[in-house]
Length: 265
Image (cartoon, rainbow, N blue to C red; front, side, top):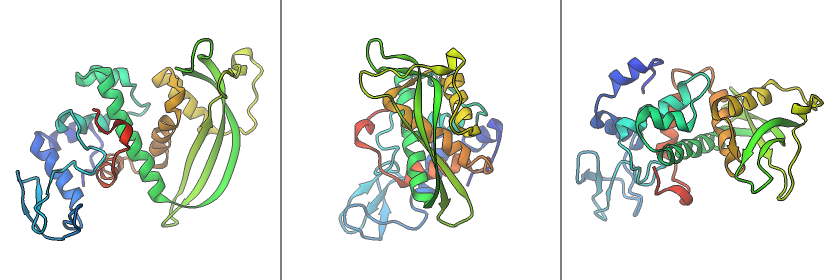
């Protein structure tokens, strides 16, 4: 398990594609091989040393098959540091900057980020136990886009913050669920008018707003929940900085991709 905190340590640990493939191999089959088609538990070497071919049905499974990295189009040597950049930068990194830094187009960077956000959501659902508390508040001054003509711009969204106890009872986990204004309705930004007073003064809401507006500048109404999953994944793992990247990669390898963008990035 990689536990480094600096980009230098990261680059020293993963110097070529095979280093990355070996890391994924060790995660994917850490509990032994089980064929996804027939359930058989024995395999031999497949097409490459990073494939596993089922002894029973001859299914040759690649490293990324049946994972969120399924059909990933960018090299692992680029995907690994991109994921590290997303979770390790103190104030996060925008999709535009991510694309520029790693020499990919913005659509590829956005789709890769969505893969990471899907893994973050899956991790949260695996970890949570019983819900302990719920707070209703609002997040003002969010620059919502792609809602339609005359419906974009700074707006207020309703937010529910849910508090859970983790499955092992050792942690409190938080997630927020924002409700975008109804179709054809634009919730005026009271913060800009100097009249907004939050119903619940919660630093997490304001940190999330600062992160959305300061790092990403705006958010598509369709994907605001995904950005919340990213923010709270970082928040819930803030005391595990040395492990957060491994936690993300492990979740990527243990879950299947949503259908709607599994072919991208």
